[in-house]
Image 1: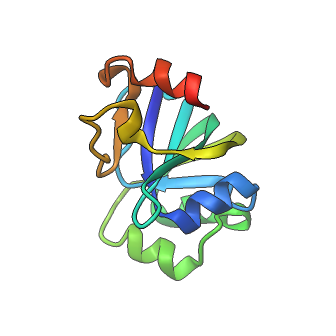
Image 2 (image 1 turned 135 degrees about the horizontal axis):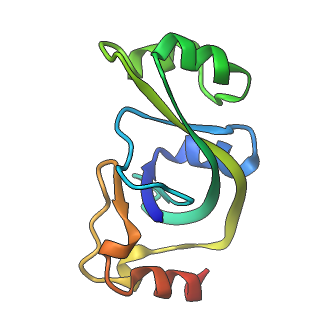
Image 3 (image 1 turned 60 degrees about the horizontal axis):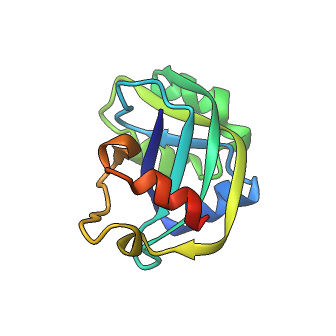
Length: 136
């Protein structure tokens, strides 16, 4: 299964450069995810690359930080603020990241495109994934 994730541009860049090996989430998709397409949110508003998922990790925030901190790509205070009040924290472990040669305007692939607040299953966007693969 493939998902499109909205990721802040600075974190998208760190993932694609290999500096950030974990993408943290408060809520995970219910289906198994093998591929993540990276939508860099505002002000970029473009699909900039993708990565394959090595594994999904779920733990308490404290334990997840201990497991991921060396390649988290974020500061501990940011991590703690993001998961404040949560009993569970999740992370996609990045396996192989690929930056697209040119960022893709998703509205050129689908006029009905709306940036997901968190994620969207690509199979729910009719024809979008096929057009994306052709554009990338």
